[in-house]
Amino acid sequence: EKAQKETGHTYIKSPAGIFTEAIMPYDSIYNKLSNDTLNAVKLTFTNYNINSDYEYSMSAPNDVLLIRKQDLKSFFEDNKVRDNITSFTTTHNAFATNQYVFSNIARLVTTCINEKQAAKKAAKDKAGSSWNETEWEKTWNKENEDWDKVLLIPVSITYDNSTNSSGNKTMTGIQHDLKPGYAKLKGGPEEENGKVKSPLKIEVTYTSFNK
Image (cartoon, rainbow, N blue to C red; front, side, top):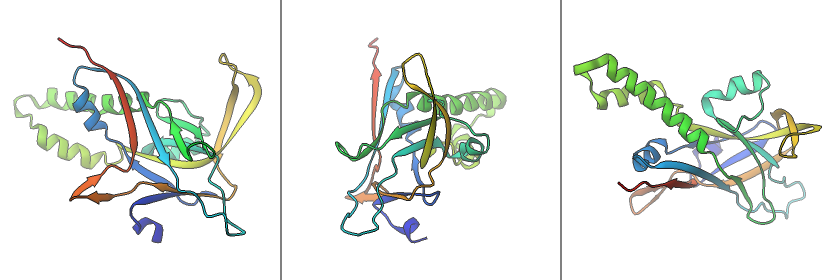
C-alpha cells in the first residue's frame, strides 16, 4: 500500500511481491511515425543502487519478464515462455549500467498499434456517416484500459541442454521468481515546470521516406 502511493520511482520485488506497471506511449509513437517505418524500440528501466550496509539487504532480481498487463493471468496459467512479440525477458546488468534493458520491443509496439487501428477501421466502416472519432477514442480507451500497459515481473527461467539455431540454450519455462530480490526503479509520475515527465527511457529508431 505504501509503495503504491510513493512517486518518482517504482519497485519490483520477489517472491511474487510487487511488480512495476508502465504505460507505453503507443499513440504518440503512431502519430509521430506517420508513413515512416519503425525499425527498433529500446526500453530501459534503471534501478537505484541498493544499500548494502544492511546484513539482510536483497540484491536486484536477476531476470525479469516484460508482458502486456492483459496477458498476465494466461501467461503463467498456461506455462508460456516469452515470444518476443508481446512478452520479453532480459537479465539485470548489475555491473555496467545497473539497468534492465529490452533492446528491441518493436514487435510489441506494432502489435498494439495495429490492434487499435484495426478496431478503429472496423468501427469507422460500421458507423459510416455517423462516425465520431473523438467519441470512439473515449469509449475505446475506457473499454480497453489495459491496452497500453505492461508489467515488469521478476522471474526464474529454465532451459534445457539443447541449443537453437542461434547457438543459445532453448528456454523451457518461466515462473515467478521465488528467491528474495528487490529493486527500486527510477521512474514514476513526476512533474517538472508543471509538465509530467516521462518516467520511461524509450528510444525509437525509424526510417523516414521523403516524398
